[in-house]
Length: 106
Picture 1 (cartoon, rainbow, N blue to C red):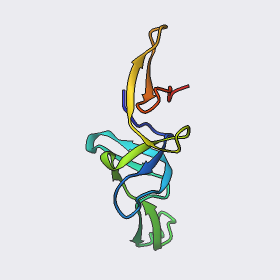
Picture 2 (picture 1 turned 45 degrees about the horizontal axis):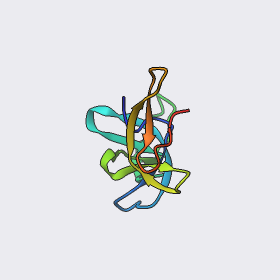
Picture 3 (picture 1 turned 90 degrees about the horizontal axis):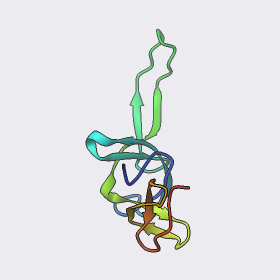
């Protein structure tokens, strides 16, 4: 079970986008990286391909960020938080915020 998953709201801890918040769009587990919405934006110069019908130009897109530079957003305390795991009475394993032991997964 991963600590950060697709759809989680996260905050960037370090780098040029420090303090930005966004939603995780994709998790790349092999490389321990995440793609976060509107974070680590780069301009990509692409060549058009008339056979495929794609236009060329400058495209802005998100690039991966290492998972160590990201913290999950805790809406209760309004800051980034660490994640722990806990087993409930019904046997389910859930993620919890370390600061206040509130359940992340509903």
